Image 1: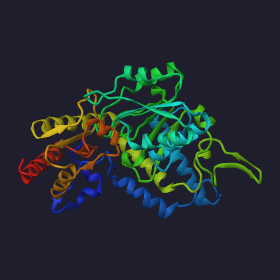
Image 2: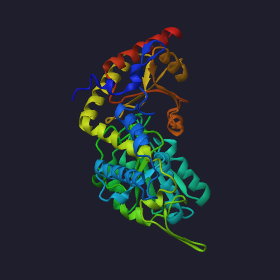
Image 3: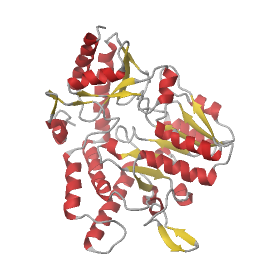
Image 4: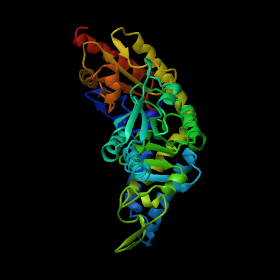
Length: 405
């Protein structure tokens, strides 16, 4: 698969930043959108817009059909067994909140335990923290080693008969660590503990088969998959989709309402209260089509080549400290430069048209573990190449000159 001209599919790369070509290395934050996705949003609003699941007029039927077609496309893409396992949310954050709230309401008692890792994004910690405040749940953390990796034996040590959920990231958004997902899930299954995977850095970079993983829940962020903002997906295995109570109430998620009783609809409808983000759902089908046209293995191979080159070049710079050294890594290079704050690094890089992220990346627990307040992060998407890495490294050298390092 040829990736050399792929930037032509993304209109944002037509512009210059401060007179320089845009070098976008912030896809772990949010990926840029191909023209096909942008066009589909416009097409839908121009020709088919209506609320879904309500009216019977022509536009409503067209919109509803398109909406449900996307559900089928997502089901196929992640190889879910049942379409009712695919729940549309406002984002991966809401998907995890849905599970924490609904699962917690039904199954969690005071003193029960939730097992996380030190790699987690705040979106996979704060919802469980709410449970700690509301229900008295105990949160435990599997620790990482000096390479930023998790050992499955570490999970074994933390599991007790009080463990009610194991929730962890598929790929760290700081170290790029690819977790030993299957091993952890197999361990959890041997003890009848459900597993939630935060897949916000996973589904767009490596192949995803939820039946093969055998996870109970998988949260997806669509805007990181070259799709629209304000949209996420929760995969919930049928057992849980049927058993969990709704996360929030409103129109469209009920079967019958009386003054003294409510009967909820079946999944996924009972989890999709109110007016849904229809245009975004419809356009997300084009995001998946874009990824499938390239081929997920081709994407993985291309991004790994760029990543390997990037790590190789950064290691040549004695002032740069790369965070983590996992054996299996995807798409992310976080680093520090002694004597330069990450925000200053990002600001100087921006003068050269190089876009990265600086800060704690919503991972303060991990940064505290590492003993640093923040880091700079370059993350790779399908549109990046070795020339982008060269521009990054040139700009880093400029930082050193500015700060006389």
